Length: 239
Image (tube, rainbow, N blue to C red):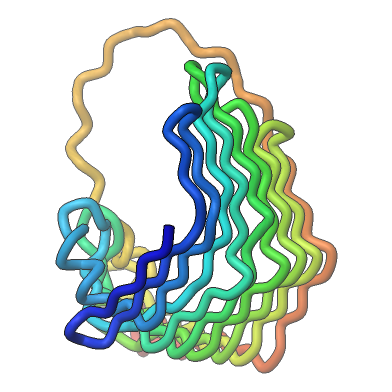
């Protein structure tokens, strides 16, 4: 099959491949160009933890999917993912503040997923490269946090082994203002979601402890970073 369409706002969708009913399976390529954040929000506003107010995404996804008697199988690769001009506002239950991002570029895959009646049996994924530029996180009040660029290389994820491995992470131009208000509140903590009122607790048997995840990072580089501290809870204010 082959399907190509374009929205009134210039968003392009192209999907081609093969599909089978018995057994249920499909393989092919999905290409999306210029998908607007407003379009995503229009269809998924209730499910998303944020309000998308800007941005355009383009990607290509190569997939091979099958649903067999022993379970589901999915192999996926996204050799090109681009996001420009992202703007969003968090919902109070998730994130209280705003975020803008000038550009994101990434290569994702291969991703291999196996599932059975009991859920996911195996999930392995790789992200060879992720680059961000112009990240700004704005709290409800006070100065924003800024990051000029981020570069992540060689990310590996293995759900079964409980392992995340990163070859290198580089941060450039971080600007982090930290302020303690007169009432003792920290500006960065104000962006965290409010905790719901605690319900009465009843004694319950303890679940067995889960195995700890292993996270490794080969190289970390921090360039041209600035940490600005301000304490308004003392007199005179400390800076």
